[in-house]
Every structure is written in C-alpha cells, then in structure tokens.
Image (cartoon, rainbow, N blue to C red; front, side, top):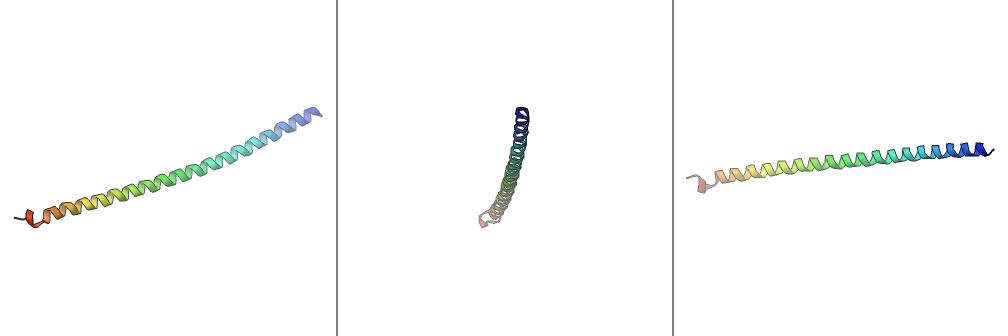
Length: 72
C-alpha cells in the first residue's frame, strides 16, 4: 500500500512538472513573439527615419544648388 502511494505521488509530481514545463514553454514563446514584433517595429521605424533623413538631405542639397547666390 505504501509503495502504491509513493508511485502515485511520483506520477503526480511528473505530471505536474510536465504541465509547468508546457506553461513555461507557452510563456516563453509568447515573450519571443513579443520581442520579435518589437524588433520588427523598431527596424521599420529606423528605416522610415533613414528615408526621411535622406529626403531632407536631398532637399537641402537642392536648395543650396538652386539658391540665387550660387547661380552667378
């Protein structure tokens, strides 16, 4: 009788550890998805910033080139 209780206790602990591992895996996956989403968003923002900076630089160069003082 004592042996059966011990075995059932071991089985219960094993099942409990499996459940906690599954929950930990799910939360880890969720964190990874969130992290990759944030990285993707940050990369898009950096691209947009670089594009806007490039556009501003181009306008500034054109303004310098087309300024009446430079067209003598």
